[in-house]
Image (cartoon, rainbow, N blue to C red):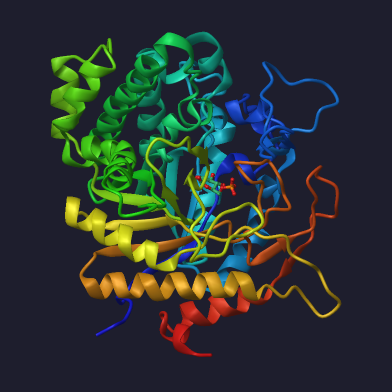
Length: 474
Ligand code: BG6
């Protein structure tokens, strides 16, 4: 029968750097997110481009510095999410609140206390915390000194950070995710791995940084199970669908290769083995990597318990053509059967069912939809904020998800991306809004910051209340 499981986890997801603001409060240090500006249009490509600075430049607006001030307003924001009916809420811990430069011997008590309070407030409101340990917010000094995850020293620094947070939050957090969308190292290495990967060594850097994170992921899994035996710790994959643009065998084959470029990450972290196809990549790209036998052992012994994905859209691919990478995944050639939002993201609910089946066939591990959402420019009217486009997207994706569950896929939960408007990771805009809750701020951070319920707020509320049955209502 088509239905959502009892005890299905329904909620929403944000990340610290896109919501908290208060970028220096309570002893926090700078992260890599704190030196990237709001996007401006690149005249050659028409794409929004976010400039990265080496340090905080006076007079420049950096969206993460203020964001939506979740740091001070989380109680009222969580109360709104409670009103929707969330029983899970995903956020990340800003590493720099706990270890401001990443290298201190002792953690910062004020930062630890902040998340202690935040998780307590979630639990009080009936929400399981789902916590990402590192979501695009590595301490800036680790990028400046070591080129981030290219350097093995980050493994032990991450281990120290994990040990501290597992010990501190063991009574409160049962669902963990190590790295957000690690596979995006191919698309934006700075954000995903705090690494610049350019020039002749580009591929060496990408694969070495990935490897170091695989080892860190395994160590985190090990520690998590030792410290919190009843916890689940997963890995997170950006996995929007990629279709061959035609039945030309080259298009089909190259699209498979492109998907496999992402699946490589779950192949290693979930199966615990470097896949056999990697041998060819290693040889042909002439990779010079430092991978030890101990690393391989660790990766084998401590795989991820579940797979979390972000799924936003689909695209098509023509063999040999360049693709642009975005926060939503690869953007290849437009699909004539689908419509797009203002940012060119083509909605495709069936694609979600497709990738869920594909992942479950491949790994037989539980899946968490940790991100799915629709960015739009909303209009505040006298009688409210009407966002039928968001409701449509949500309804269609939930229907597809229910089909996938009926197909036999074990899906634990669903957290809509940005249930409250937050800063866009890709463009730095506030006006690319995902929320059920509107936040009165513009792209430069001007506005009252007031929160308002959109129509989608009530739609999702009814959906959760009926455990998904209402998605069939008109
Ligand atoms: C995901 C990221 O890739 O996409 C989020 O994990 C991000 O951090 C989300 O916000 C949506 O992308 P964007 O660019 O619209 O914010």
